[in-house]
Length: 201
Image (cartoon, rainbow, N blue to C red; front, side, top):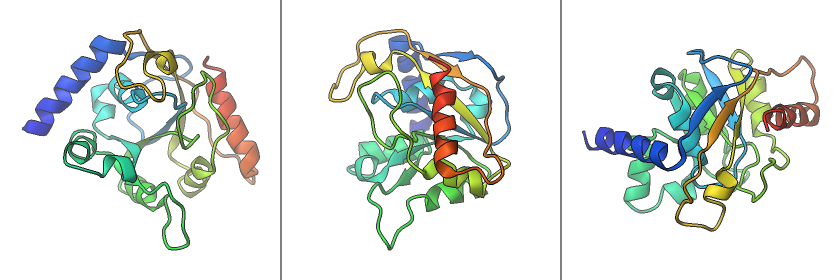
């Protein structure tokens, strides 16, 4: 009950502060299992995209978040796990852990994901180079739709280092679904995936 109340309250607050208006540019809302990949410039990115999704899709879609941040304390794990149903991952890569394992498990279970291929926030409106995670997920789950998303204005509403948002209307633009081509090189695919977001600016 508490998680449901907090979820409804946060959705209302996000819509009030930034709007999170969805705009399906070259796609339409689809209940098919998907990976929504987007630019990352603000603390509000996850909330904006998650709130912009239709409710039926939102219920099946899990944001990916850093375990070292969202796994600490009491409030942050509650929000991440109970409210968002997020997938928590380790940001530090080592020989003993596979940071993509929790994402693979979630996809195997039929969940959709929200991911940030840049790996960290930046201060620019355009995404920086993508890391390899999206490529490996696309290769392992070829039937999962890959949906590019561009989050507009959030780099100005709540940029890296800020704690309070500046009220600005954010448009969440959903682009045309892409897929990994047969024998496509990782770098080629990642550049093409990034370009699919740039086209939405």
